[in-house]
Image 1 (tube, rainbow, N blue to C red):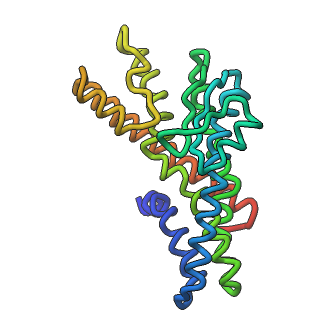
Image 2: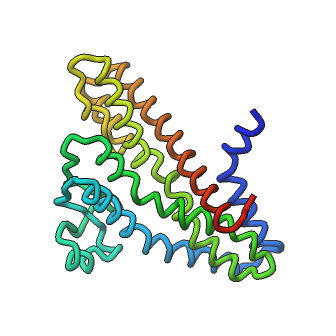
Image 3: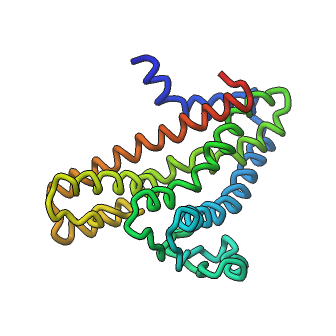
Length: 239
């Protein structure tokens, strides 16, 4: 039980350990560096994240026709390079036109590919901050840059990871419930889907399905974080 609790606390422990390395004593200039590093990292990461969704679909055999990206993330420039990019979105970015050919593995790859960056860059970089305890400026830059990438799965708990959970849960449900519509619980926005169901023909069974999909998504988040820890240990010999 203690090992499980330690594992569940690992994302918070990694963050506080990094903060302790950066702030042996609080300095406003160091805090500013973290904020700027976070902002720049977020601005660069968002369009890369969305493009990786598209290529997760394409590389596994699906088709992409429309990827919406907000103008502030360079959508107009990206549109000149990627024909499926459209300027403007209700979110920072959203893959709205894609065909998985009915293959759930393609669907899961579409959702998951951006989080490979969390495993191979974000978490190892976050956990390496403590190595720069004697160089607070370098540690602050690394912390600011790492946070959006390392914690992207948690930011996506009601988005991409809920969608991955819903793909798995809806498919398993279809094996046991005759005539079940697997698209009913699938969405990259839990709150929007819950609202639509509650205002329509939603049932207690739908509530159960959405809750279970959310919980499966949480399990997948921690599986991603565990993979990031393993990658960090391999790269930096972290404990």
